[in-house]
Image 1: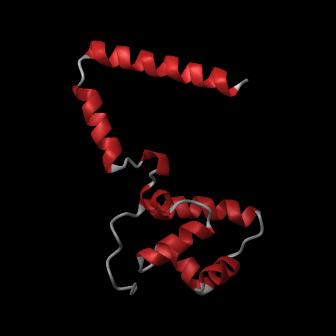
Image 2: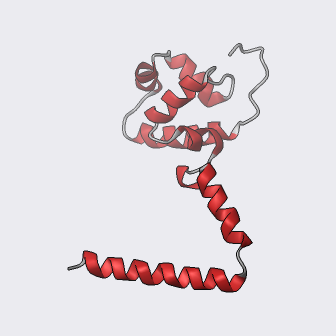
Amino acid sequence: MDENQEEIPFTGWRDRFRERYAQMQADGITQGKLGNMLGVTQSTIGHWLSGRRAPDTLSMFSKLAAAVGMPAIQLLFGIEPAQVVTKEGAEVARAWEALPEGERVALKTAILLLKEQLNKQDNF
């Protein structure tokens, strides 16, 4: 990304990167070492940390996320992977919400009883 280009709109990634990098520094990881891990220069890492530049591809964001030990979606958007819902999961959630309250309570009770039964079987 050219220094004269506008900043990408999702700037929260930088705060997450800075926080994780600070933890890495405590373990002896320098900007140079991180740059070597990613195949970029130390000054590129410094530009990312300072806000003057950002990785210019999604691939580089993914590599950066892996290097700092977090999923790319968490680095980019602050979303934990467990918060991502599949299409099927969204359909199940809509179906659940469409059920009358009494049916939801009965279904939840049945699921909890089944789970309890399965746990008992696993403990034998």
